[in-house]
Amino acid sequence: MNDPAIATAADYADAMYTARRTKNLLVLLVLVMLLVQLGLFFVARYTDYIIPNATATTRPAAFLVDWLQYLIGASAFLGVVLTIVLGFVLLLIVNIMLVGRLIGVARTTSAYVWCLVLLVLVFPWQAFLGNATFINPDFKIPGVLYTWSELASLARFGIGKPAELPELILRWARFVGWPVVAIIIVLAIQIKSNRGLRQAFGETEPEANV
Image (cartoon, one colour):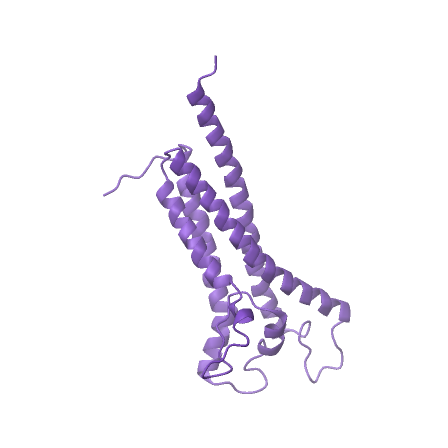
């Protein structure tokens, strides 16, 4: 005769294993989307494959530009959607750990909170605030993920014409600084959630509170 407690514990374990595999896949995909956008910025800034040089005699092939434009749009869309799904998966893991009274829930909850912060950062606020009226009409609050129009118009800042230091700081932060911050947050989410799950599975000893 099967022990109901053992069957329940096995069911919780199966659910946690499934959620952990899903979480790892989502974290990897979000990292890929961020790295794709970071890499495409450097390609657009330092090569002529995306933004042709005004003095160049050749232009990028139309199909290549179309594919790059599609890739930028897809990476921005998937970056937001996958972050939302990651937040739901982490919330599911937290709920399972709370119902099952498992240890490690503190670290997993911290990972979930950081995922919400990540979602706020990657959300394309510029798409919703594009027609907003500010004192400075050029001021818009952007998300970490950029669009094709932003890349095409802003990637070559400071090249060919001098730019003031505040503009350089803002542009580098827009295309490099904040994406790097987002990547660090994604890695922190992965580390915190993995530590919490390992404690829940008994793979590591729980840390004593001082």
